[in-house]
Image 1: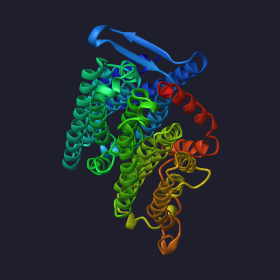
Image 2 (image 1 turned 90 degrees about the vertical axis):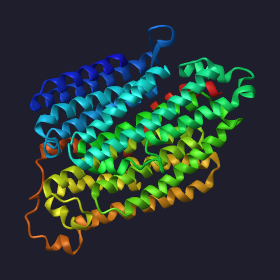
Image 3 (image 1 turned 90 degrees about the horizontal axis):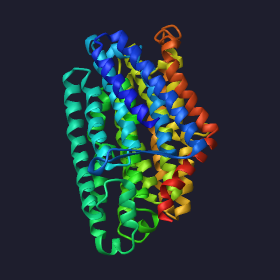
Length: 495
């Protein structure tokens, strides 16, 4: 089924792009992403019932292995369900940002991007992973550039340049691992590294390789200070593109990194080698990103750039969890991938709705917006409260998981930046909410209630995303159990 998802999305991309009819392209994208979500659900049910599945095709140097386990299904569900909701929301939004003649190209790029992101996660063979990473980079830059304005072209090219730099670093790391282990898949690399005496003679190879891969993934996933492409790309892109970039694209590269580190090296080797120092650096940089991203978000007056810098901070949380280097730290990072995906996709779509209806991006001019767009701003409030970490929203569960991982690893000092980051999140989300519904501007607003509101049918996919934010906030148990099973399989090599 994993192959079916990739083929479906790539074929759908070609058909949507080639049809040259914007209405037909919209329908193709909507149907394809819906089918993708259905297949992802069916694939997950199969894995739960029968266990992980492995598919092999080709031979020799070009032998490719696709592994479908719990983590792969977890990501396939995120790509499928959230991808579908974003595409659905874009049906009524994309004409605001993209010329009619370019809409088929936009949906072709979106479907191609979703297909390659799935491939990044599914492939165990590093040649297949690298090719998928490169293709996803071009598709991701394309959904920024497709707006066809000077600032978008510049932002897209900046993103593509730094993304290719990141890919090159990943490739150099893969080459070093191949020279050292003669393996081109995660399992082959793991078997070599875990073999007796390997680290005693070739630890330098491993450290150099994983250092380069870490640097490459830092650029791909916008980890501070390698985030410099992200604010421009998110800030200028069509809002559905921003939602896809933030909630989906960044996550595929992080999951690949997790699999390389914890599946390819293992806890025992990490604990007794220089890899522990590398992960400690990752943890500290993650903490720095949590604080710096939030400070930069506070300084913004453009709503999309504020949400973009917020993503920089949220990537910091994920890398902090990875750097903690424990099973629960890994779980906290994976759960935050889900929390960030459902929350941030909704926030970017809300921002797009506000800009489309009011022709305003300036946060200082959004006072009283709760009266003009009550449903839209209620959805923003749900997303904002989740990002702050208020109970009953998925963001609270995420921060609880990080706190638990920190205490379990005895890195108690991390509780301080975790708390500061939550406070900083409140400093840039709550003022928007308060000014929208309360204060003098809200009282003096003369326009009728809901006068700028989009039709509920157009807001429905964003409402469903908000429902997921609440659902995963009050009933996260099944997701947690699912992720723990995936982590047990991934990290079994290290015990």
